[in-house]
Image (cartoon, rainbow, N blue to C red; front, side, top):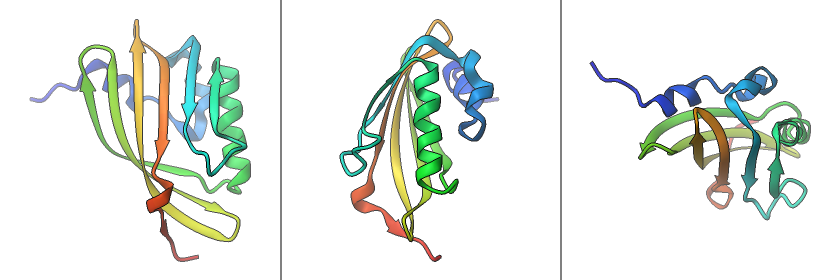
Amino acid sequence: MIHSHPNITLLERVDIANLSACADLFHPDAVWHFFNTDMPELHGDYSGFGEILRFFDTLQRQTGGTFAVEPREARAIGEELVVVQTRNRLKLGAQRIAFDVAVLWRIVDGKIAEVWDIPALHSAEPLAP
């Protein structure tokens, strides 16, 4: 039997579509770093769970509620870090796209303390409307 790393098990409980129900998984001072200079209105750091919720609310608004995440692979690195690859889909303006994302999660004392969210938008693929 293969046992999942406890930090991966923790991340499996994160529901981006209902993030407000996941507050207990985040450290009170959690920081979400979003690296995307093509979306300057979202690019930056979001400190605290309220700001992280605001980031995702803004993302959902800007994409007309089309933002969706498909986890592909997760790998624990030591006792603190997890790297997750996802395939994200959304609509920006009239264009529907899919792209890969690398997300580095830092888990401290069983809570999400910091996240680096790095989308690969330059290799985004257009999707049929």
